[in-house]
Amino acid sequence: MSPSDSLLAGFASVLDAAGCAVDIQREPAGLGGICISGDDRHQVKNRLPLNFDFIGEQRFKNIAEPVKT
Image: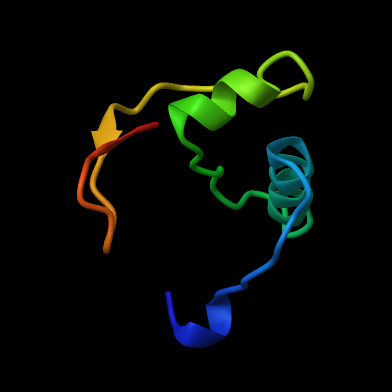
């Protein structure tokens, strides 16, 4: 990913953020999914028509502890 491929946006809720991410992924057909934390998944799992796959704990830059995704 190059700097021109990134986006920083603020949202009022996890539900709004996940919905936007899904819409962005649908636009250019065939792109990969989105990655959200397990806590966020619990907030949106029954409110958006999405399927979730647990991919295990992931390490991210500048976050000390692994994140359950």
